[in-house]
Length: 110
Image 1 (cartoon, rainbow, N blue to C red):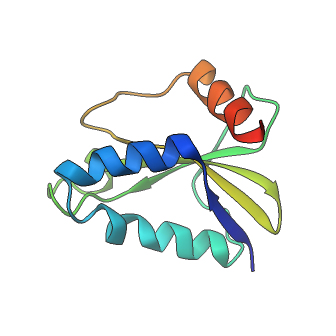
Image 2: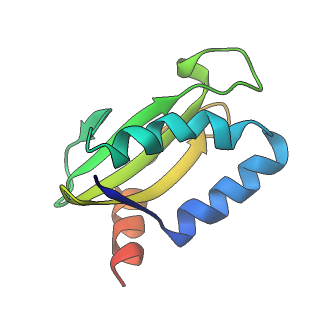
């Protein structure tokens, strides 16, 4: 059973998205459940020193499936510890840069 922690940047972005997308909590809950079970889902992001994954989640408020939904970026600290770093709506933001991810990792570890 892995402990899933929400970083400040993740919480801020989640709160901002929740103002527009009322279902966001239930949409990302399956991801949190999988991570707590120890299943590291999604695609691993290369080019960083840390073990970072990006996973897609559907947006129930706009029926476009996972491709137009949310992206959750998380870091695996250990098999028992996961940090949720960033979340964004694909319709609002293309891709996050490695710099943004590195900044989120650095901020989370401070």
